[in-house]
Structures are given as C-alpha cells and as structure tokens.
Image 1 (cartoon, one colour):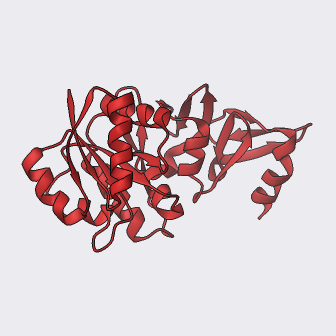
Image 2 (cartoon, helix red, strand yellow):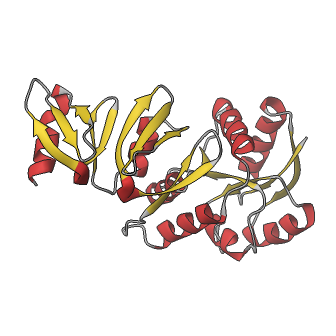
Image 3 (cartoon, one colour):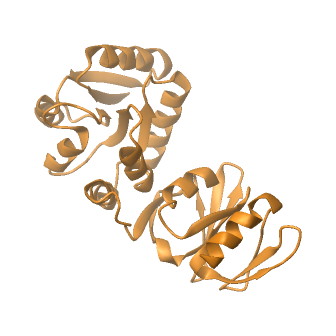
Length: 246
C-alpha cells in the first residue's frame, strides 16, 4: 500500500480525486486531505506521505511556494492544475508528473504508475522547476530527462538531435552517447521549445546550432556536426529554411 496526501483548496476537487484513487488506484491509500498549503506543511511532517498530489493554484501560498518551504522533497510528487502555460512548461522541463483538471481516470493511473516507477524527485529537479518558475523567460541550461533507469540531467547545448522511437525518444549527444528517454518526441519538443530546436520531420527534432549543412531534395536532409544525417519532410522544409536563414 502506498500512502498519499492530497493538497487542494477546493473541497470538491479533493473529493473527486480521492474517489478516483479509490476506484482506479486501489494500491494508493489517502491518509490526509489538506485545503491549504500551510496546513499541508504540518500534515507532511506528521504523515510522511509516499505520494503528494499537489494543487498549484492556491491562495496565500501556492504549491510551488509550499515546496520551497520544505527541507526536502522525500515523496513522489504529482501536480494537479488547470491549464497554466508557464507552470506546465516548468513542470515539463523538470520531468515531473502532473494532471490537468478535471482529472481523467486513465491519466491518473498513468501518472501514479510513472511516479512509482521513477521514484522521488531529485533535488536538481526541484531546483530546475523553481528556477524556471522564477525566471520563465530565461532559458535554463540543463534539463531532466526521464529514462528507464531513472533521471539524467543533460545540458541542452550538448543535444545534437532527437529521434522518435514509438513512445520513447533517442537523444544523440555531442560526446557520441545515446540516451533513451521515456518520453515521446512531442514531450521532448515541448521541453525544448524555448531553445534553438526545430521539428524537421515527424520523427526528428534537431539542434539548429549543430546543423553543418542543408542538402536540397524533395524535403532534403541535414548534415549534423557529428556527421550524422537527418531527413527533412517536405511539409517542414520551408519552416526550416526560414529558421536557418533567420
């Protein structure tokens, strides 16, 4: 049995989530429900939950401010939120789990299973999250990439290209290493959208700073700095050429 605490200022949302957990995630036992971040601080200390379902938008102290006040994050963390562009971008960037309200039962099961398999957040993930939130328009130079083994911290500038492999993505780095991320290419693209990356094909995302040459063709292809080539789809060719020339 995995113990959990729900933190949300809306009683209805708390009840709905608790009901979904009981029905679709019977391995999770809700130990406490907190209607404010301040009450959650004491509850976390008393109950030591293994999973914290944390609402982002709360009065007086939001979910992120709550995290800043904790001496350590020694539990699995799943955010619950309505759509918030900057918050979701920061969560994506730090490879943490989140659920959009109203919460879908399948998405809840997926998030719980992922949180259990990955484990507690690394201090670097929380640091990246809070740094990205404090300065949403400033590019953070390191991202957290979830893999089958856990999490890998990678400098963005070291990524040459990303290739879709089903529900996984293969990242090719400057040192020749390949990292298999347990995220789709679309997820990785969202993480890197503030940087010099472009989706040049439904299967390929490239670092434009690492493009050595564009070779013409129906779509053409790119020669990258490490000597690898990446196909360009005809539908993305015009967009790519504008970015390369701009």
